[in-house]
Length: 117
Length: 110
Image (cartoon, each protein chain N blue to C red):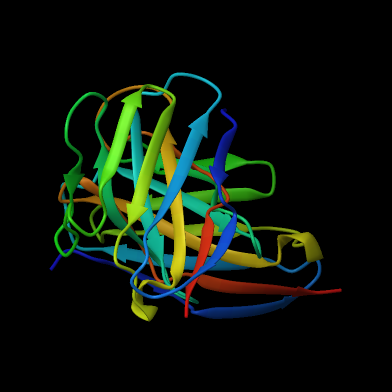
């Protein structure tokens, strides 16, 4: 497996501000994903981070709100922009170590716990 | 829309008993079904997965069964231990993305 590090592990932010979350993997991976987990809820896919091109967003999530970068095969960032209390969630990075497509095992980081005041 | 239904939402067992969590999915084209364990303050950990060409897979105390005809799959944990207490999520590939069930809070009482 791989070691997936997310920073920060938690943060408390003021509404209207933005926060960038980093995801670092200790080996090159084919696919990286960003999920949101609202308190006590399941996981929802925000977007697939594509290396060298724009991320692919799921319905209900837009680039202006959640800009994503993936400059190489080991690193990605997710920015939560113009935050409101409804953005309070756990944001999780996951990776597929090999293969293409979503039918591959995904491994998760420990997430970023975000609270908006 | 396409979804994954997971039951029960909470499950309480005595140490040493077995625990079973069931999921149903809507997309007959789904071919990959992982199970995750999430402990408090941690990210989900992949514990076992199964592909549609296999009916059952076992790894020590954990097993997963898949019934493609009925579109349901189950997680079986035998000889449960207190450290098995966590939230368990099933998932399936639906419409080209990994879709998660609602989760089951498993509590194993010593």
